[in-house]
Amino acid sequence: MRLVVLGSGSSGNAAYLEAGVDSRGDAAPTRLLVDAGLSKRETERRLAARRCAPLDAIDAVIITHDHGDHAAAARRLGRPILATAATAAAAGVDAAHTLVAGTTTYVGALALHAVALPHDADDAIGLLVSDGDVTIGLLTDCGHPDPRLAGAFSGCDVLLLEANHEPSLLRSGPYPSSLKRRIAGPRGHLSNAESALLLQQLLAAGPAPRVVVAAHLSEVNNRPQLARRALERVVGRRSRVVVATQAEGAPAITVDQHRLTVEPLPREQLAFAFEIAS
Image 1 (tube, rainbow, N blue to C red):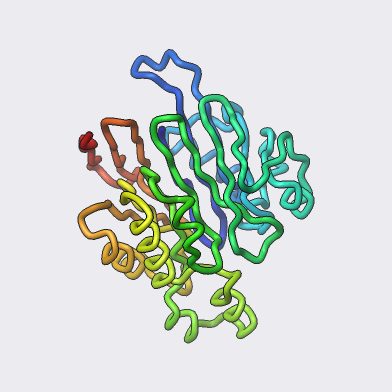
Image 2 (image 1 turned 90 degrees about the vertical axis):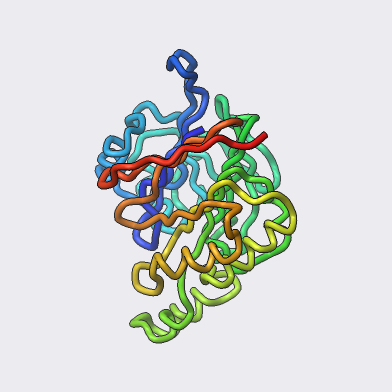
């Protein structure tokens, strides 16, 4: 499986997933886009820049909830949409398939398990995406750490985990008080410390992910080094921590049963690959 976070943050979220491509490229792949918070033009530009399939080759777009930074462009992308009934209604889209939290939906080579999240949107979900060998978890827009979520997402090979804000920066920042209360509230967004706590709960429930991607960072109320440091304190040498940004997304990650590769961003030169111990 290959995960490419195209952009992550308060201004727009989208992640590309691909599975079912063999070493010769003969197998029919499954390609998904999780969330559609970037414009159609920007989505197309970033797909091309990150060596992803073009938009018209993507099998489906999954919308995790109706907030604009996740769903604003869904109707304009021209691809089948998967969402919960409440999310589809709130976002004003026609879902080709209705997702239900706690159940698994199959799209090509991929199994999508929806997990209910405590966020202030209609029926917000996280996702566990598996090709039968490896699992990628996408867990953002989560109001507070919950041991139930730690149990659901334990055992992921790769985990995309929200680390939205640093409380001191949020408190002293320019946002109005009402928005600050919403972000910091139990149905808002995870702080760096809350993200670290949820990751600690996850490690107590199962093995550490191979890679943790710190995601949905606020450009105003957080700093990449703060999010990285908070998560690295928890995982130590057990996981590699990378940070997704609004402007560039995150390094592309390809994982199978035996090998994991973290590809460079376009402006970088080095890729990192290592064998997965059996």
